[in-house]
Image 1 (cartoon, rainbow, N blue to C red):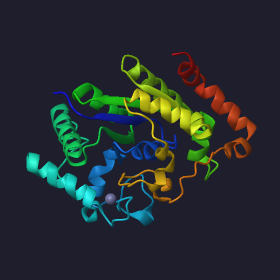
Image 2: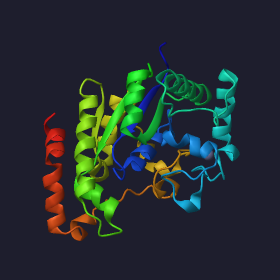
Image 3: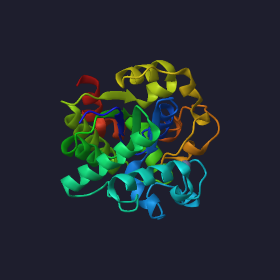
Image 4: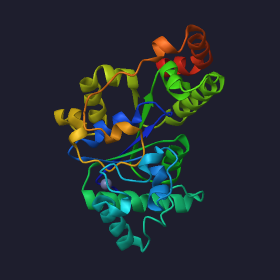
Length: 276
Ligand SMILES: [Zn+2]
């Protein structure tokens, strides 16, 4: 079945800048983001989402106390129910069974496209396994965006609150980045560096939009003014300012020995992203 929409799936590590990219894409007039969709179950059951700050509970970015108080999510729920008899509470987007996984994800995206008429749907779940499942088990038109951040910045964001060792995060960075590159080797996908996006949003976004089959709109830089109902992500999604700030405290605070350690341990991954 050919579809009238495309799904941009942001794949990357925690703290790779996915919330910013998600918001920039969502601000296009023909796009809509659902955020970190793998957490829909938590939001639908009003449980504490894994990646959300406690004080926000399972509220929607628009300010509604839950997705059940939000007209956008309510409309999607009604459409899913009309098509299948299931509600968002029963939808299992993380199903282990491949057939169920494909059916439920297809149902969700088709219903969302029906309701919004969007040409581009953004799923910023980031998780490798969800992307692998979407590519392997479904016929959905998914374009992965591999969002890469300098390992020193990414790992600093992860460990900054303590004196935690950088060994494990560095190994994880290396393994996951290499695994993602392998998965995407034969898939049409986009590779984007967080540092480039932040330093020069306009040309980078322009290129991404072109690869997604849409024209870049200048209003995308005013992302905070766009309607937002994306799930999870960092606190940036709730701000009212569209300012893009460079997060590079790691340059001063990470220390040279930890920087050297990270550089060494992630070398195979950073080399591969430059050469393949
Ligand atoms: Zn909402």
